[in-house]
Amino acid sequence: MATVPSPGFGPMGLSVVAARLLDMIESNAKADLLRSLQAARDALLWKLDGLSEYDVRRPLTPTGTNLLGLVKHVTGVELGYFGDTFERPFFEEPPLWFTADAEPNADMWADADESREQIVGLYRRAWKHSDTTIETFALDAIGRVAWWPEDRREVTLHQVLVRVIADTHRHAGHADILRESIDGAAGMWEGNDALPSGDRSWWDSHRSRLERVAREAGRG
Image (cartoon, rainbow, N blue to C red; front, side, top):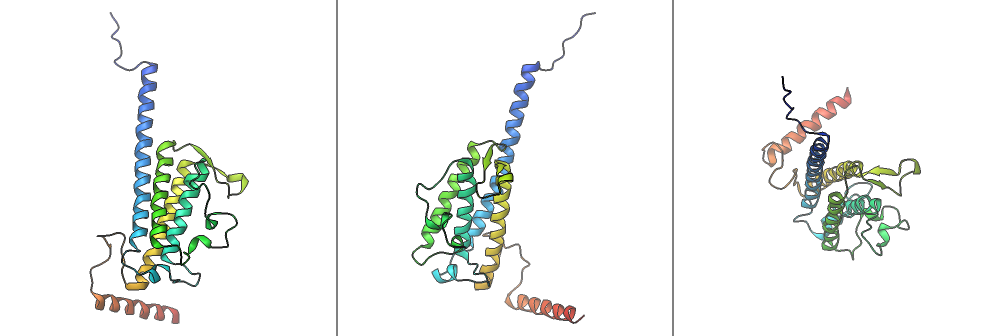
């Protein structure tokens, strides 16, 4: 009786199919990660919309946290992790705040001569530089974070992406609270505040209730 050949692939065919599947998986993973990063970027910048130069710069916490400083900080984060780490430096001559000689916390606030447009524009250019790195290198590509301890400086692009996404979302959350403290505006992103519907009096009542409960618990 004749043997009917299997309709499967030979070794070379399987290798090609496997490689294509891996490429598709990596492409989808990158797209998912980039969407998450871009959502955080957009949310952070949205928190500056409609505010004065004073309001975007003024310190609103005991440690001086301010909206424009957060944007400046995450700009440096992206340029460091997606630029220098993978040997793609952005600056030919970096500004002082981006160097090891900068004063402490220099990337967390803007000088009076640093305009909002300059800092936001630099952040948007940093996105493009970062996105090129992400699109060019595989997720398992190796980079070196020069400012980390020697024993853990070697990282993959995947690890860096996860770190920067977490960092940017964290600072977008900071910005959300800062903006609410300025003018009451709150929300995840433009067109979706993800908050219960309620007018000013409802929220005042809600806040008073929470204050009362907190005081009761504190007395317990």
